[in-house]
Length: 124
Image 1 (tube, rainbow, N blue to C red):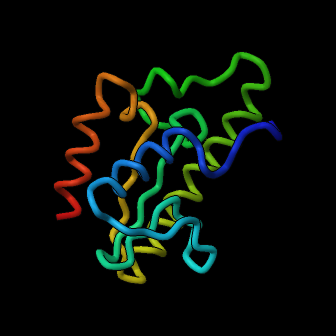
Image 2 (cartoon, one colour):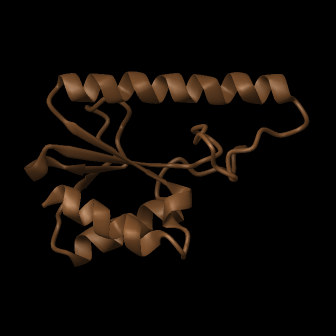
């Protein structure tokens, strides 16, 4: 698991390149904010989290399957991640930030265009 990256993942970079190409300027992984959001758009008071479907327990997603070995451990881990996500989002909202979650399954080739255009619409 030490090989799993926590930041600068391919899906995250895809979203960053899209936003930059559309003229948005942002900060990355600000430790002063709860949850160190992946992308921070201070001008829009918006943060974006790019969540991995497996690691963050995306409901009804084919990429969020629980492994057959160490099932109990994985369930505990993923449920903990989901609880942390809710807590961090809640704290950010209390501070006046708008929180956008993008799932990696939404960035697959068939869905990426729709996902990024809806992101653009929500920011404008």
